[in-house]
Figure 1 (tube, rainbow, N blue to C red):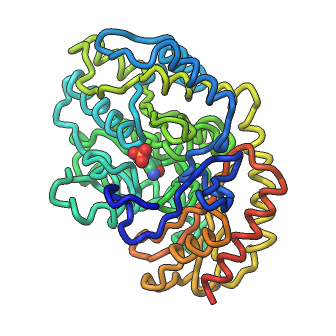
Figure 2: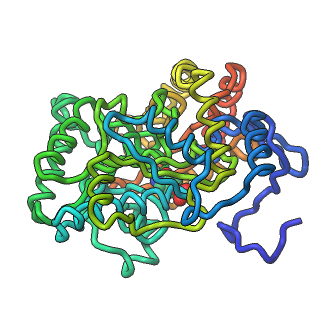
Amino acid sequence: MISKSVFPRHSKADLAVASHGDGCFIVDKAGKRYLDASGGAAVSCLGHSDDSVRRAMIKQTETLAFAHTSFFTSEPAEALADLLIANAPKGVTRAYFVSSGSEAVEAALKLAKQYYVEIGQPERHRIISRRQSYHGNTLGALAAGGNVWRRTFFESMLAETSLIAPCYAYRDQQAGESEYDYGQRVANELETEILAVGADKVMAFLAEPVVGATAGALASVPGYFTRIREICDKYGVLLILDEVMCGMGRTGSFFACEQDHITPDIVTIAKGLGAGYQPIGAALCTDAIYDAIAAGSGFFQHGHTYLGHPVACAASLAVMHRILDDDLCARVRQQGDLLNDRLHARLGQHPFVGDIRGRGLFRGIELVHDRAAKTPFARERNIAGTIKKKALDLGLICYPMQGTINGKQGDHVLIAPPFIIADAEIDQLVDLLGTAIDLSIA
Ligand code: PMP
């Protein structure tokens, strides 16, 4: 029975009532089992019934549930920060906790802004990000992204952001152009935009190392982020990497940016940090940023009541121990290769599958109307939405997205299963997904 009092996310959706979790499955009230091929939205990296996380949360609740950070720190928060920093990209030394991905991005933007005010460059305020990017739904994070659909109703409330092209080789690499040259060409758009805005006004460049929801596990070509880092350094622009979706081992390394061989000034994480057990996020930054604030006003002008919540931090600490102690990044690489092989075997020659991409257990499938011409489906056909629905009927949870990148419509399905997924479950996932695609594009 669905309550009339709830304000549902989609008023027209016909939602089942989730009852309980069982490994990689969610079971609804009617007893139907759904294989969670997207971990919700790249959240449930340990599946839905991890004992160690459950035990850690119970234990923490029995000792200390809450202590406001104006008065106390707590052992789980300190330990979690230490472990995150021990595994963070080189030079990233401080962790600031929040309760969601959007809040992590808000905190990152404010860290950047306050840093520039503290060091006497208050005119720097402009963010540059990429078209079709999504960095969260709060007003600051929404303004910093280029997701046209999400912005629609709120445009007049959003701060001005400059948008450059994403690194999207499948669509935009020109004939005769090498992958490397393509990456340099699109990265150089950042320099053009910085100069157009005025180098002294630009505060930060914000991007996902592997684009998740909006582009279906889109990694950049080798050399792209190296060039981005060079341009940021040249103009004193901070590089903020949003790893809310692709971080925490999802792509086979603890931070996705490790595979692009770059270090950010600020990096955000969230989804996999809580693994679905509780809401948490973090913005991690360098000493340079922390020191400027500490030596200046001495107080980061930000904060939420629940930041560094002891139970949330204790759960995340258990999540991190599972990932690190059980070397789940290695497992992600192994199972990711298997998933990739199986996806290629089932869908590689499919007439309506244009591209299969991604890293680790973060894979995207791009649907096209015409393989050779890479023509997307008409928007009205809502192919991704239909696949999601057919998949749910079949007992599979996959994450659909219909987007506009560089003016081109595209349908994607994002696959991001729990790291614990077994070989047989990968076979089942690919089988059900293939059937859902076939049924959706008759
Ligand atoms: N950044 C990225 C890259 C995301 O994918 C998301 C959520 N999909 C967010 C930020 C916002 O996270 P949250 O929904 O937890 O606020």
